[in-house]
Amino acid sequence: MGAFDLITNAPPGGLSDRESGVFSNVTICERGEMAGALAGGGYDLAVCDTIQIPGLAAYPGRAVLVLRETPEARLAGFHRDDGRPWDRVIVPNPADHWLPGAGAEFARSVEPAGWITRAAGLRQPGQSTGIVVATGGGGTPATRALLYPMLEAAIGGARRLLREPFVVRQALGPRAENAALSETNEVFDPGGDLNAIFRDADLVISTAGYNSVLELAGTDTPAFLAAVPRSLDDQVARVRLWGGRLGFGMEPDRVEEASRWLADQIDRPRRRAPVDLGPDGAERAANLIMDMLCPVS
Image 1 (cartoon, rainbow, N blue to C red):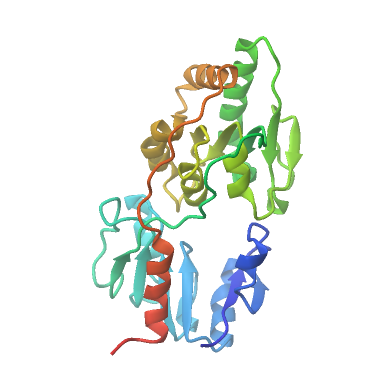
Image 2 (tube, rainbow, N blue to C red):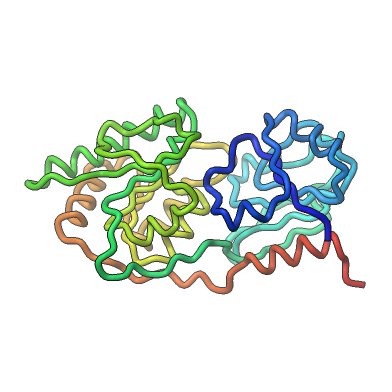
C-alpha cells in the first residue's frame, strides 16, 4: 500500500499526533492550487472532504467526495467542473438521515457510511474544563458579524440573570486569528483534544459543525448549539435536529430564551444522557476508500 498525503489550505492544527501521523507529507496551498498539486503528485486516488476544487480536470485520476449534509440549493456546486462524475460519493451519516438527491451525472455511486466521530466517553468525577465556547473563530469576518453578536447577547443576558459571576473559556486555534467574543474571560488553544475538552466541560457553547456536534453527542455534556451561516455545511438543519437532544438550539429570534436556558444550566448544573450514534462509520468509510485502491474481484 502506498503513502497517504494531505493537501490542505491551512496547517492541520486540530489533528492529534496519531491522526497526523497517517500522512507521509502535508502540502499547504490555496484551494485554487489544489488541482495542480493533485495533478503533479502522481496520485492514484483523491479523497475530497466536502470541498469544491476548481480546475479538477487537471487531475486525471479517480476521485472520491466525502459529502456532509448540504442544503439542496447548494448541492449543484459539488458537481465537478469538468463534467465528469465522482467515482464515489461517501456520505458520513446513516442512510435514513440524509442522502444527496443527485443522479448518475453526479456520481457513479453514493454510499452512506454512518456517523464518523471521535468518542471521548463520559466525564470522570473531579474533572472540569469549565464553561467552554467553541466557535472556530466564527469562520470569516462576515460570518462572525452575524454569529458573534447573537452569542454575546445570549451570554450577556445570562450574566444579568445570575447573581454570581461565571467564567467563559473560548477555544481558539491558530486559524481563528484570536477573534474572541467580547463575553470571553479566557482564550486557549485546544490543539487536537477538543473532544476531550467537550467531555470534561460543565457546559459547551458551540457552532454546529459536523465534528463538534457528534463529539458532543457522545458525551453527557449539556450543549448550546448555534449555526455559522455558511454555504457548504448545513448547520441550521443540524441545530434544529440536535439542539433539543443535546441541550438547546439557538435561533436568531430566541435570544432571551437562550439566555434563560444558559442561566438555568449554569445555576443548576446537570448532565444529560449521551446519544447512541450507532455503529461508527469510520471503518465503513475506510473500506469504501480502500476498495477504490484494491478492488475485490
